Each structure stands twice: as structure tokens, then as C-alpha cells.
Image (spheres, rainbow, N blue to C red):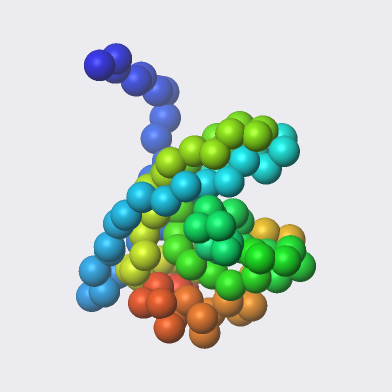
Length: 122
């Protein structure tokens, strides 16, 4: 195992509470045709082929949120990749990332139905 060194550290502040448990699982992220870097906190949709993409109401098959990406990851052009997600939990709404022009308000109700709660932190 190699040691990672850095001159600074900035906490993600992705979580916004601990009343709702964080449930993790693995999924497959679909290759996007070009390399794409996704940040932890990206909200994902699950397509009919059981692969996940960034949620975006303007993209057919990607309109409905499914989970929150747990780690920063790079999805290579045409290669699917396994990734960890949170399927429930309490998240800092300012750290959630959406595709297109979507916002937390676009998806808040559906996320709540899934057990994913977005909260404003003071």
C-alpha cells in the first residue's frame, strides 16, 4: 500500500447528520463516451440496464434519482466501472451534485422517498 501525502486537507462536509443510517452498496457506473470525473456527492440515476449515470431530467433514462456517489471517481470513455454509493443517509445539500440544470429542489421529494435527506448546514 502506498502512502498519499498532501500539503492541505479540505473536509468534504458531505454528511449532514446521523439520525438516518448511511447504507452503502456497489453499483456499475456507465461509460459516458468521454472521460468524466465525478465527485463524491454526485446524485445518480439507475437506467433500465441497471447501470448508473448522473441524474439529469433532460436525459432520457436519467431523470429519477437512485443514490449518492460515495467516492470521487473517474469514469473512462467507454468503460463501465464499479463504484460505491449511499442508498440512504443525511447529506449536506450544498455538496450534492446534479447533471444539467437540475438542483436539489428538482429532486428533493424523490430523494426523501428513497431515504436520502438533503439538509442545509448553517
